[in-house]
Image 1 (cartoon, rainbow, N blue to C red):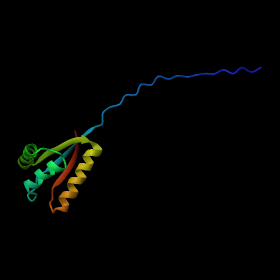
Image 2: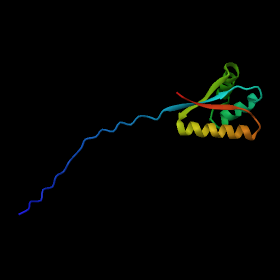
Image 3: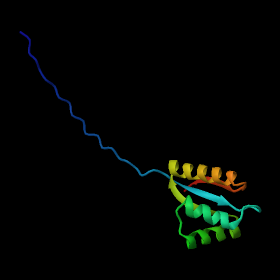
Image 4: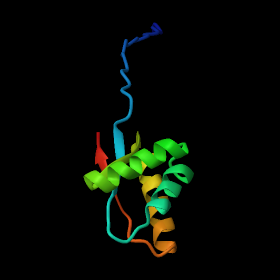
Length: 101
C-alpha cells in the first residue's frame, strides 16, 4: 500500500526594492559655445523655464560647470547623448558629463 502525501513548502521572502541611483548631467563652460545656445539646450532638452535656464547658464559660465538635471542613469545618459548630438550638429564644442549623485 502506498500513501500519497502532499507536501507544501511555503517560504516567506521579503523583497526590498531601493530607488534607482541618481545621476547628474553636468555641462562644462568653454570659450566657443554661446550662452544663448546653452539656455536653449536647458529649456528644450532638460525642460527648464527661461529664468532657471539662464541661472544655470550663469553658474556654468562663472563656476566652469553646472548641473543641468538629476535623473536615473538611463534618462541621464539619454539627455547627455541628445545634448551632445545637438551640440555637435550645430558646430558647438559643449562638454557634457554624467556624475553619480
